[in-house]
Image 1 (cartoon, rainbow, N blue to C red):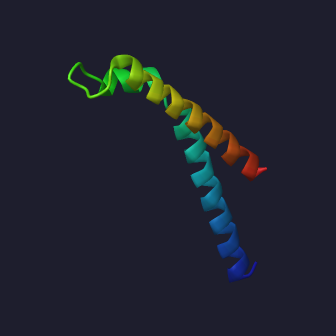
Image 2 (cartoon, rainbow, N blue to C red):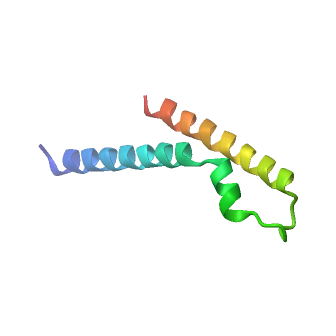
Length: 73
C-alpha cells in the first residue's frame, strides 16, 4: 500500500470518527437537562421562553445529526 493510500485511509477514518461524534453529541442534547442546568429566576428570559429556545435547539441538533448520517452513506 502506498503512503498516499495509507494517508487517504487515515483521513477517511478520522472524518468518520468526527461524524460519529457529531451525531452522538447531537443526540445527547436534552432540552430539559439544559434547562435545569442553566435557567434561574433572574434570567432575562421567562422559563417558558427559555425552554422553547432549548426545544428548538434540540430539534435542530437532531435534524443536523440526520443530515450528517445521510452524508455518510
